Length: 116
Image 1: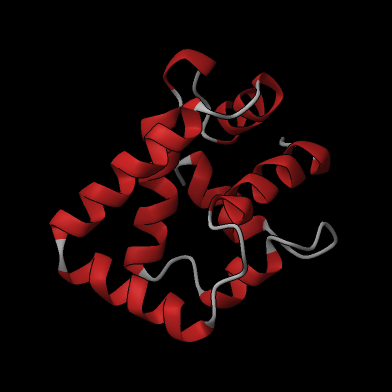
Image 2: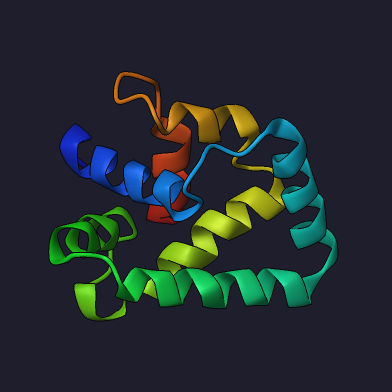
């Protein structure tokens, strides 16, 4: 089971990757574009993987645990699952907003990131 502190670190990294909280309009545009354009989705996954390289070791360990991979090769799985969840609608805007709250129910996102 993923500890709340590990999830908080990972959630913070997800949110900070965009620097600010997205508006619902931006979220909806992102969802539609990724759903309808494989090229956009592949580009965003590649960008996400590149950003993962810049994380500190504590963040990398937390992300690797979320996706049940080792630290050496977690990034592609992590990025595909998270961005795929957005594209498919399995991660909603409300789920995204809850990532900023350590007391919110993150079970849906945790299951998706674990591969369920």
